[in-house]
Length: 177
Picture 1 (cartoon, rainbow, N blue to C red):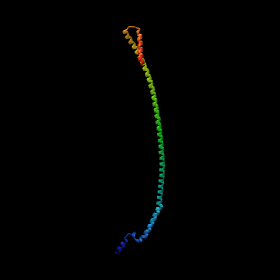
Picture 2 (cartoon, rainbow, N blue to C red):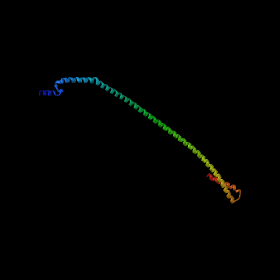
Picture 3 (cartoon, rainbow, N blue to C red):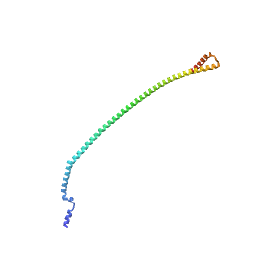
Picture 4 (tube, rainbow, N blue to C red):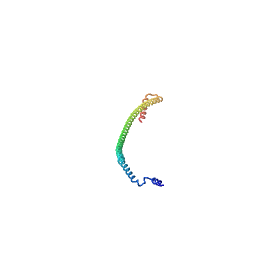
């Protein structure tokens, strides 16, 4: 049984034995020191370098973004100015074209008016010629009719000249009215 007590006493957790605490503390300090040295000498400089590179990249990216933003604003202003200039140009061209069209329209109206006046004058001349011809024909027909009527009623020749004069006077009087 005594052997069983020794086994049960030794069967406990070795980390909780107070006799091994100084040795465990020593190795804990050595291990922590080793980790501290590795972290301090290797890991922290690399992490610091990565952080500084990221900060530099972020600063340059922000600077590039600011410059691009300024360029974009400049381009927007340039585009707005170009659009305004194009608008002014198109409005000027539209006004110019409108004026040209009005001039062409006025010129066409004047030409049409001249043509119409010329045609009206020509038509009036033709009407006068037709009226003159009609009066001449009316005189001739009236003279012939009067002569025939007088010849039927009175067979004298001296009266014919008088009848022609009366007929001409009557036809002239109606033509002037």
